[in-house]
Structure formats: structure tokens, C-alpha cells
Image (cartoon, rainbow, N blue to C red; front, top):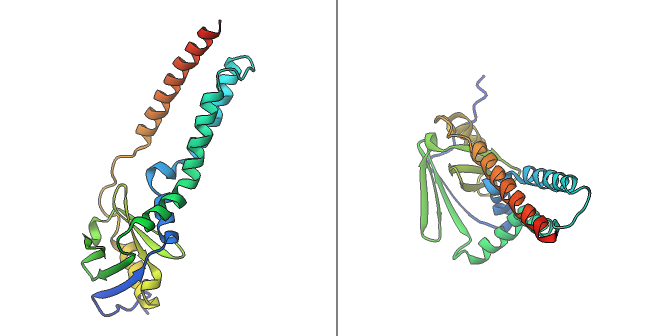
Length: 199
């Protein structure tokens, strides 16, 4: 007996209303927010390193610590705040989905995004939605409540069998390491200038 889900009547056309709770998981997976624990670990390591270099003195670190706290607050709270702002500024909260065996179309407020299944980069399934990457930093949301259980099963199987078949793009980790290296150098320069000014 085949374990493949029954194919529902195609095309599947569905409507739903998007809420901030739908957008937040997608925003949290954007490159800026996805590395939040790395940012936090790096900030703690930098503070510890410079306190050690300064013989246990916290002099001159106050601006960096304040900036770090504000930045970390944005990284951790940003997805929720941006989701609420995005919903508040949307011309329409109604989203129309149309999917068939070849492609996926998502329409909202007069704008339609259409992609073939095999050019989508990746997908993540959450309790409420399928998050689909149509570009490296562009995520579309397929809210599960718009689809019947049979349609959800077909979408899950289709995404799993077709998405991400293209060669993966170059990793952004090297760029992230370079950014951190530049930040360390800049902070070292500023710290040395502050130390010189205090002598």
C-alpha cells in the first residue's frame, strides 16, 4: 500500500486572513534574526575580553554595553514588533493561495508571487504554517488553516519532494565572520583612543 497522500482536486484555491502571529516565525528566520544567539555570545565574549585587557576595569565600556543591550533587545524582540508593524501597514490582510502540480501562487493586496516548486529554496513546517523561501531573504507563508487536512498532506509531500533541489547558495557564514572581525577591530581602535584620552 502506498504511503503517498491522496491528490486533492487541483488547482487548490484557498483564502485566509494573516495575523501578526503568522508573520513572526517567518521574520525570526531571516538572516539578521536567525543568528541571535551568536550575536549574544559574541557580545559577551567581547565584553569579557576587553575587561580582561583593561585589568578588570569597566572604564570606557559603558557605550559599548549600552549599544549591545539595545541591539540584543532589537534582535530578540524585533520579529514580534516588525510582525505587528507589517500587519498594521498592510493594505489587506486577506491572502489568496493557488497551488497545482507545477507552481505556487500567493496573492495579497494586488501583488502576486508565483514560483515553480522546483525553484523554491527551502521550507520549514511550523504548527500553524509552511514557511517557504522564494529567495535567500524572502519567505512566503502558507497558513495551514486555509487548507483541509488532505490538502495540507499533499502540500507537505510536494514541498518535501521538490523544494531545495537546486544547488545551495554560498553560505553567509564567511560574511558574518568578516563583519564580526571588522567590529572587533573598530572597537579596539575606539577603546585605545578612549584609553589614550584618559591618560
